[in-house]
Amino acid sequence: MGDLFNRLLGREKKSAQQAKERLKLVLNYDRAALNPGKIDLLKDELIDVISRHIDVDPSAVRIEMAQDGRQQRLIAEIPINPSDRRRRR
Amino acid sequence: MVAKVVTITSGKGGVGKTTATANLGAAFASQGFKVVCIDADIGLRNLDVVLGLENRIVYDLVDVVEGRCRLRQAMIRDKRLPELYLIPAAQTRDKSAISPSDMVRLCNDLRGECDWIMIDSPAGIERGFHNAIAPADIVVVITNPEVSAVRDADRIIGLVEAEEKGPARLVINRVKPEMVRREDMISPDDIIDLLAIELIGIIPEDEAVTLSTNRGVPISLDGKSQAGQAFHNISLRLRGEDVPFLDIQEQGNIIEKLTRFIRSGGD
Image 1 (cartoon, helix red, strand yellow):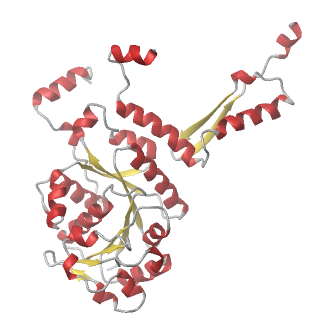
Image 2: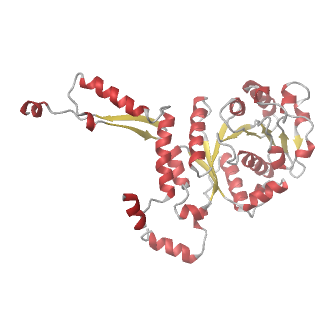
Image 3: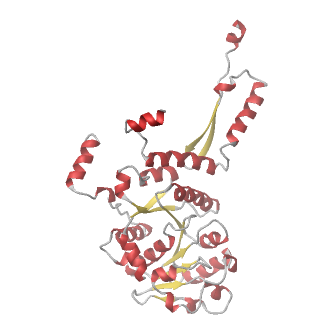
């Protein structure tokens, strides 16, 4: 739907932009020698391990690959549930 | 004389390795340097035809390595230029016929008697690639403004670094300014951004390249063609000169330029 809407308004992303975005992702995974699907596995395992010690919200966990020159970094954002809120419930 | 060894590689096939090797070699030779071009693509040789020397081959790279001839005997001299030589690849053997240390030894034998050794790497990341980069002082990675070619270039850049031959330098070949302008082709800026290595050349798509390979006459000898000029500039940058990049974007008439200026908000 959104795609169609954008296309009708002539707002479809230019193909060069699409190429760049796709390449950015592909290069991130290639450089880390990681298949993209593996990130979800890693995320589940991380949540498992961390929740044993800290109360986290699994649905809010984000794991991303970031690029810094030719250096790759794995960035995990894991919001912790506040302990007082838990008590109130 | 102590030659610099330059290897041109890409990962992906068909992006312009052989054309670049031939034209950079010819550019150096036209500047008065003594140049030896080596075709490391054993089994799929083509540097001979691009240079127009295919009919003069007697001995090849494998003959030298296996001791069937002396190095000098395998060096074909290009008669159009004062000192441009080709050591052709063998056509009936495969990459395993030589090893990286064979290439290092061969280049060391040549270093004392020429200024530039230009090696045309085969596509791929296997033995042939390792043979080609083993003796390199400078590795030039060539790519096209396409997703597949840029991805392979990135892989190669990583491998070159792993072999401690980096940082590789980048040449972007077959750029179509008109498509870049329409944002339908990845721009050189975007490619540099993604690959994060030093750019040493942008070669525009140019019909004159096809004509030159048809004839077997390097295009870098033709000062009028855009691609020839681009190769010439790359050769100067490899010599360490600071040459401004050709503004291939800024072609077009005054109305086009004006429209672009207005659309960009005048900045």
